[in-house]
Image 1 (cartoon, rainbow, N blue to C red):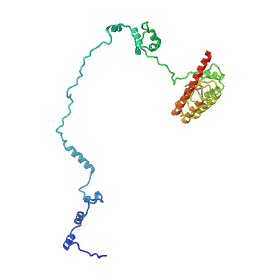
Image 2: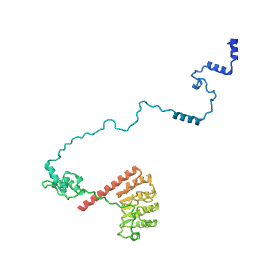
Image 3: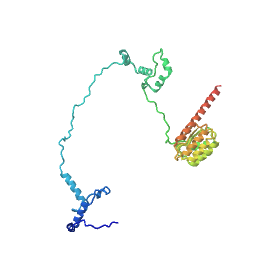
Image 4: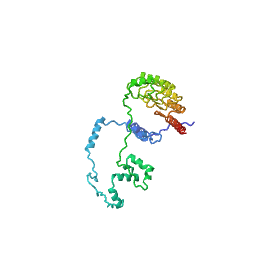
Length: 355
């Protein structure tokens, strides 16, 4: 290995010069000699450190903000040489719509115009019926004008005569108020039911204020052996779930009830499924309403409805607000099937009676 000899890089004069430098001068000298422009150094370390200066005075943020505001207010705004203040006035020409001369051409010949001017109200209604202008006719007149007999009568006999009158609105059909108070004599109706009165074919206790659980249980108990009651309405009677299950048991032995309304009660899924299980074997019930229950029935009970209706062929109307689309379509399909079966039975009965 070659021996490395110490060499003096500085002369005696240069050494004396460096020995006479202060610490600040040496630091400044080192900054000039250091190679700061390196790619591997962070950007903040490539330049001269200028953060070692002494503060010029205390910093007060509030005073600085006040100074900036005062400085901004004291400076006058620069005026744009092209600035024009807004003046509310009409600029340009005002648009005026050109008036076109209208030439009135008669729609009808003079002789027909004179005839229509002299026609009475009855004549105009007759003409409206022939031309199909139903807006001038009453409901009955419009229906009469659409019949084939109307057009046959016009041949060779002139205009068909209609009763004079103006177009009037059709009277709206009146529906029963769901919140109306039921004024049925409870004692008399229950006495007929318990006695098995054959004249009692309908029992309507909808919205009755005197209905209690004991009364509902009596009705259910006497329904088992009843042979005359065909319509039973128990909507909005606060029927609980256990009464619904007892009613399902009563329907197993009842063979005359055709319409059962249990809407707006407190039935749960258990009692609803029990009622639906009964309609699989019950052949007298034609209408069953279970909509608007306080408790949610659930998807499982809705599927049970569809399965029970698939086995039933007598239910013609089924009232329930489905939450699931599948069971709703399935139940509608089976109800339509039952209506078609009932229609075929009626047609067959007419044929037999005709023969």
